[in-house]
Length: 316
Image (cartoon, rainbow, N blue to C red; front, top):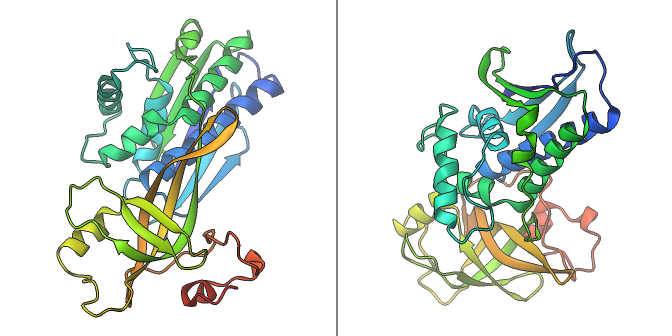
């Protein structure tokens, strides 16, 4: 069963029309921001986003969000979107005091009725620290500011029955305050499924050290931070013990690649294992369809590779 929620965006124009450029930029930015927020809450959740026909009255967009019911905080999507769009830090985005910036944002989220227990702190930090999101936000407010017919920016989060949960309004004279473009060139993360041999596991819950592994398909070493907290707790409780024999310990993990541009070159800044699907013979959860395999340097067409092939290693 899917979870459904709706976002209304009222542009505050007095007529039933709006400049195509304004509408396209703002609607596109809203959709991109929603996608990133969902991924911050649950990187592996299945979701779809629809744009519904405009309604009577002043011009507005209605976005329908459909997520698989595995997401733990679907009610938070609209609240986080509205909180992000209306957050104004008293500090510069590139200020060295990053911890205080994040604290300000988290306090602002509470004004949307969310407590720190509603979703992981890491998710809120990901949303705030995402340069891509900051640029999308600046882009949408620039478009609104450049359209003299737009008097305000009203956003409403509704539940599946279209009952209003949250509402925010930004006046035209405030638009410029939200146009903050970060200097850093952080790129959108990418995700790949890997089957790896474990060379050096980390056996403490709070450790920030990387797991050392070797990709069984490319035969190349790969290190990552284990961010699947449920698996980490089970692993440390010995629910999934490593082999006591000389055989290899293996894992199937879904890795998030954090990236940035430096001198026009793409650089991987961090690898995070956001989901562990299998360790040795223990299948922890089914692998969703549509995940991208790590098939670099493989001779077989990636479109011809099945999950069974990937798991068995028969992909050459």
